[in-house]
Image (cartoon, rainbow, N blue to C red; front, side, top):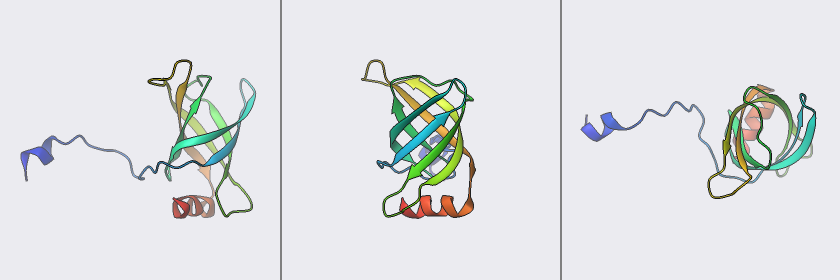
Length: 114
């Protein structure tokens, strides 16, 4: 094995991320908030989007993800796993969500569309 391969950082992701604009409606339970966002990237495990408001790590969110060529949105639940100040854009935050509940058929459709 080449030394450079041994030194390469370990990537724990099980799903490839795809840079894609996908629209989603979200509902945050506490404190109550609703909104619309466009993803920065998407995978079978979650999404990343930019927000004007930081979200608390651990917050639970309900999503309706609107995929192209699909009449009904994918309904799922997610949890905030990242809420960092966005580089190069003042007063913006990169929010990472991990899916906590998504139907198998919806996950397959999401991955297939990517």
